[in-house]
Image 1: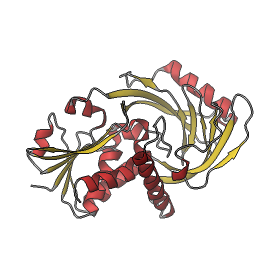
Image 2: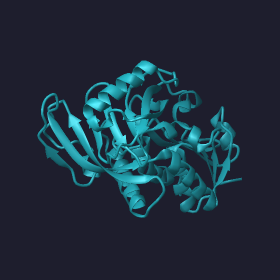
Image 3: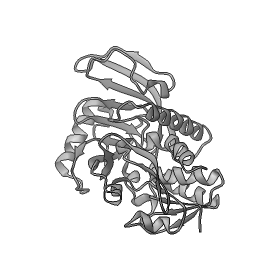
Image 4: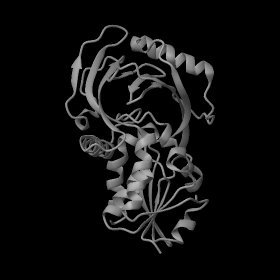
Length: 310
């Protein structure tokens, strides 16, 4: 018997497993796929609570995650960077965004039409293809155990441990019978980095973003609620590139290195992070983070550990 079984090997499951292990729990992580085959690996993974409504818990998770990644960037953790960020708003907002308290120093500047304001701040950026394998390896080196399997029912995991963390993302809809869970398709394009270092995000619909990493730049994006296809669409690719070049002209002619499409595990009403007591044991649910999984991950992991009693 292990103390805790964590279901899900994406960023929410891995951070929860790591936090529980560091607090002394015996943890087994169940994941049917390797870290690079999770939806987290498709994410642009730049700190920002995209399309997430204000909630005191969400703000707390975002702030704790920001500080965690900032420390990791300072300590040279593989795949973790800090990037100056420009948010170009279109909605005429004049007050402080609800998330600003979690983002360190935030500055505001005038903008020309069609934008109404520019918000500047420094944000963590995580290269998931580097960070996720590093984090899983770190978990195993800390004494955690990884099993390549999924679960059709929560009772399967409860038969192995008195506490189960349900970080199954989109699969939680069927696993828990939760009709609020739904996919939001996102497509990105990867191009060679011509030397840019500042992230830019345009608030318009469907939203445009340019996130420079070490060797490439992530261009996006799309936000297609209810869509299940993970096959990149050529027309969408060309539209993304055109919008991003218009936003950052230095990208013109940058070679395309690849493209991906993934399904954000969204949930109407926001993330579900709570403990459910059952006759067989306790299930700590941690799913429904949508496109903000990386942004909320480490703070959410702290809450999960607390709910698990670790």
